Amino acid sequence: MFIKIDFGDDFIQYISCSTKVGRKMNCIQKDFLNWIFDEEKNTKYWALENGERIHPNYDANAIIEWLNNVRFKKGIGKAKLNCYTTILSEKEFILLD
Image 1 (cartoon, rainbow, N blue to C red):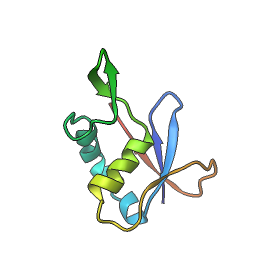
Image 2: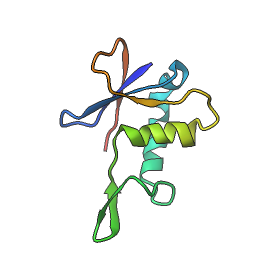
Image 3: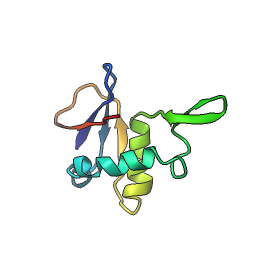
Image 4: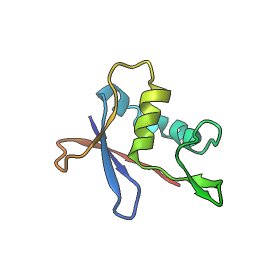
């Protein structure tokens, strides 16, 4: 399944994942946002100012890392970034600030 992630300002990325995971995306979106805003659990995806973390700064790679290594780490199939411009089917997954 392909999932469209719209970050706003014409910045859109697509990830591919299993249909089982894709169907849960809207339900687990809040869990991702809790993880990305947790400074203790997520140390990689933060913008720094004067050496201090000021806010999360992420793209689809953060969602992929979270899906593969946190949420569904025991799963066999892994989510990955899709660089193709032609998508046959997609499901909206819109991240809000």
